[in-house]
Length: 438
Image (cartoon, rainbow, N blue to C red; front, side, top):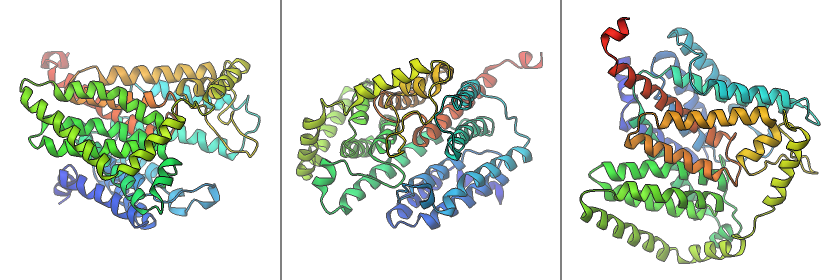
């Protein structure tokens, strides 16, 4: 019986159910029911099954079903406080039961160096509170997620991961559309970038779409019903535009070039031509149907596109803080305004230098190197798509708050863990038996 259940959790219908749960619970604001269900299912999977991969779509589904925005720690409901402990306890039971080797993974040292930088940066912080400890522990949670999946996967799950990403991309795009269909004044919402899905604001929504759209392009190229996936990609791009996230849109515009080359590179040029015409017509129809929406979007971009939103001053502030504390940085909360509101420096590298100093910057560079080396170690269509996906998010991170945020870190670490495991299995399968015996 358990074998049949485990086999089902590795199937496409299971992924469809996880995606449907995310949309349904989010749409009807039932995350108080949905998230506990997800946690129980993940816990059961951790305890019963050796291969942890089927918990990934559950994890993402639980994330995307949170429809409320919590602006203060006191507003966070109990079930969300219980989420990290239940996941951690489930992972620990899994590792004990299946005797998982834990301290293995190319990202480990980069993560640990950055965590050390977090601790040391506290010496330069103006104030160290319980929240400082809380954010430091989130860094440890990232490390646990990476090491757990890196060492708890039994098979090559790259295709499974791509299926998960493409379906979750549809979830995010659908939630974006539903948000705009619900608001009283769509034009005002676009012009003022008011979109909030609960689990994320415009920039985080854009980051996920930038990361998920390449997976859709992958299936557009590698399945017979490619027109369906092209239409899905067009829909996702339209929803990306409606996030009004300049950084996300610019990042996608850059990765759209290699994605187009990847999609259109084919011996059958007629199919490529039809695909291109279909895409143009599809985009034109969406713009025509929602003409006022896109006019409002264009007007907003025309007004703010050349406006740096104070980023040059923020970048100068980051460099100033780094020069004052070059070794360990000014602390996690180096940028606090007069209302005690925490802000970031809107650039991955500058934020790291300002808050975690040179030590944290070494950890960041280590992590980036590992991501690139793992994804491009054995180049296939799938790994190229995953590389483009992460590249797009990093490009967005040059102007917005991306790195260190759960919306990016969890997915990035899972991608690296899955590909790293795939690389190991590939090496093992091509190693001569005589070499293994030696």
